[in-house]
Length: 83
Image (tube, rainbow, N blue to C red; front, side):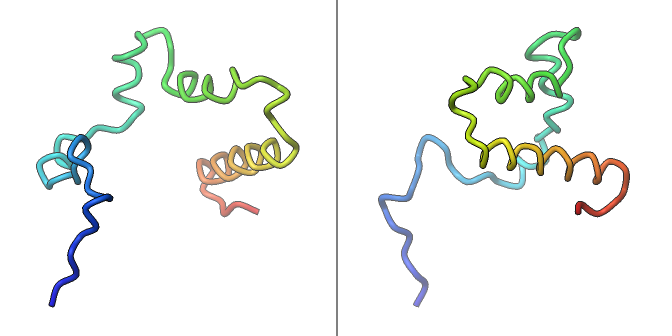
């Protein structure tokens, strides 16, 4: 017998994506310049999220996590495995 979905976890405002939704989806690098203007690059828009965080909110653990993510992204762009 199939498992019934939990009614509390069903989100009518944000339903699961269909195949049509996935076929219309575009990468953030294409969409963000349209939203923020041609002068502002997608990477800047994504970076702003962390750049505007108050310094007192950035604990050493969070700073380390961000640094590791940046290193992993840079290594991936170079075609290398992250260390």
